[in-house]
Amino acid sequence: MKVTDRETIPFNRTHISPNELDYLAEAVCRRSTCGDGPFTRQASELLEKITQAGRALLTTSCTHALEMSAILLALQAGDEVIMPSFTFMSMANAYALRGVVPVFVDCRPDTLNMDERLIEAAITDRTRAVVVMHYAGVACEMEAIGELCERYGLALVEDNAHGLGGAYRGRPLGSFGSMATQSFHATKNVQCGEGGALLLNDADLVARAEIIREKGTDRSRFFRRQVDKYRWVDIGSSYLPSDVLAAQLTAQLESFGTIQARRHAVWRRYHDELADWGAVNGVAQPTVPDGCAHPAHLYYLLLPDLVNRQELIAHLSKRDVQAVFHYQPLHSAPAGVRYGRVAPEGCPVTEEVADRLVRLPLFADLTEADVDHVINAVQTYEVN
Image (cartoon, rainbow, N blue to C red):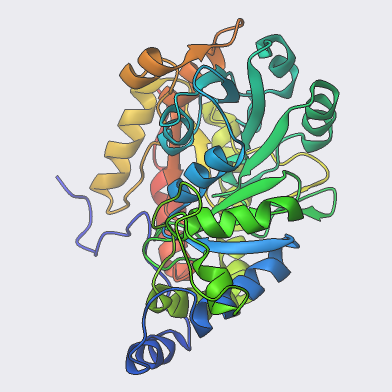
């Protein structure tokens, strides 16, 4: 039975930026809505400024950007790529589709990022790359991971789906790996419903990335008048989004500062006003290490166990607050068992936190009254 009659506060609601509808209308009225139009170029330039990436190529999803990274790494069937178990399945899929074996490493108990101390033990003579994911936009230990990759001659790829606007020791996330991927799914800070980007920090990868994104053709060179016709020159797929999606994304990126300011305000209120409740009830809050600047992508709580996690979600639902859990371990998922392997130490922390984590509503248009209501609803729950 519901406790209140108010409208449910959703976990996420997309923000509409001031120029969004005008840009969408402009893109449609141009009567040329295919990719690499004016808005695609504008959005790419804005993204390059935020991330300081050498080149940003918009894609139809972060999943597709990850698939492009797997092709660009020239991986062969049987090669291995080290990645976290506590992440979205798109990362593992992108490499498994190429016949590559995902090697799943446990996460840290504090940041929930892949534990950099466990990576070296997972390296074999078939390891070709390390793919990191900055959970909640809090940076992985990029200095240690970068040094390890350099020592073993491994490629470094960042899944920066959570991390746009985040930084590690003053350097933007997405600028560390030879490649990084972004998500502009409706649940992200900046979104166009479905969309993504491949960030290229190695100039030698740009030309081939353009070809892969354009179905394996040199179409981009043709439109720059560098060739007199375009042909099929490599493998690839249709990874280029419509300029209509890019129009929406351009407006969102132009409003990035405003969106971020509001999200940070909500994040801080949760963090400050739930601290005492968390201490009394044995509930852990997010950890942001020194030197890490997070982008307020999500706010989570770690309950003592699965029973309390489920009871808190049900408790909040009765009080018109939609809270949700998150990733389930990849290493023990049916496809993870079939296509991957687990690092020597196993993934006990991943298994534990996957059962304990709950995410609270966090989006730019949450009102102060909404935040008050969420905080009050959480504080009325007592851990058993």
